[in-house]
Length: 128
Image 1 (cartoon, helix red, strand yellow):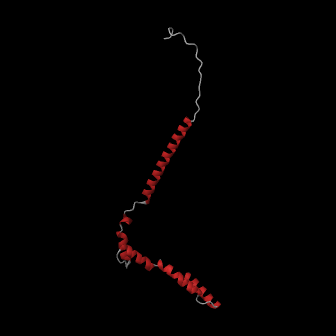
Image 2: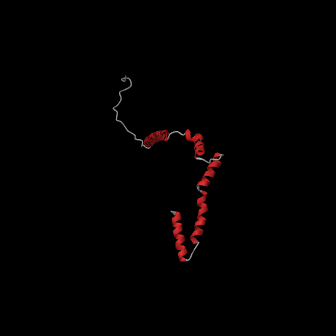
Image 3: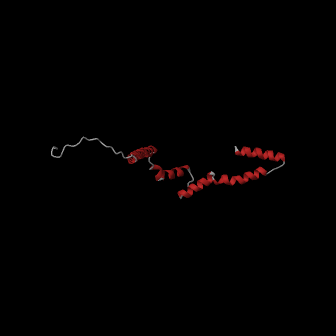
């Protein structure tokens, strides 16, 4: 698609008397695209592997030999553990909030002095 657009714009520039303007811009943009091209990616993979990878079989053998690819835990196990810990911590936070809230409400209560009317006590000799 980009090649077709470049061809169309180059043709229009040539008709308008400005040949080479778009071609120069495209030439400047190509090195950035070449940095991520298939050859550069293959070279990078070979550098990381430490050996030449010139065929699909060699690439597949290298990827199969990676221990991390085979020993990964399933995502379901990780998410179950994560959700269980999240619920546990949420319950602890709610209980801690409830305990602190009740404790603060009790501490903030005003003291009330209550006088209870009591009939006269009988003399100590009659008490028993």
